[in-house]
Length: 188
View 1 (spheres, rainbow, N blue to C red):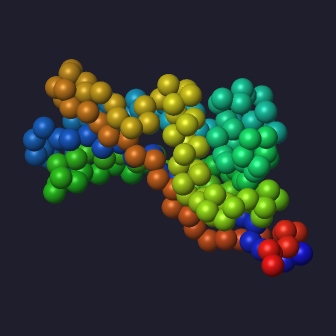
View 2 (cartoon, rainbow, N blue to C red; view 1 turned 180 degrees about the horizontal axis):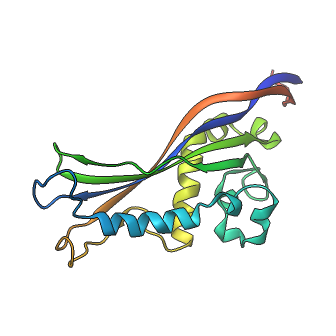
């Protein structure tokens, strides 16, 4: 059966690092700045667009590409449900959460994700979990490339024994690129 469906989504991917502050200090002084900046430099180097989008990505090993970690259908020998079309840097805001005494730095990316034909055959929970799939793909890429994906152990030279927490979140935005697609017939 042929239907009209949205086949692309835009959104924002955010990799945040949060470090507890040892004491209240002026907002212009970031105690964990070096920890955050070093980590963010690693993230930026790994998530450069040419490593994940278009034909230039094929020059990199599969373990270095987000596409490798997207869900597939059928599960064992299948084709990916999504393809990353753009991954554009969208700034790195830094702020202080005074309530929880945290120093926070976020590396943000705007992305466009295309829906591929196997998406329409996969079970709906897997196919529609776009945010979860992208977060999982980024986390898996970080693990494969030895970049911290949950916590950075404390830096005793900066903040004695305090761990910095990492979070990877995907905010899905508007759908676009509506087109005709073939889907399986519904079960009777």
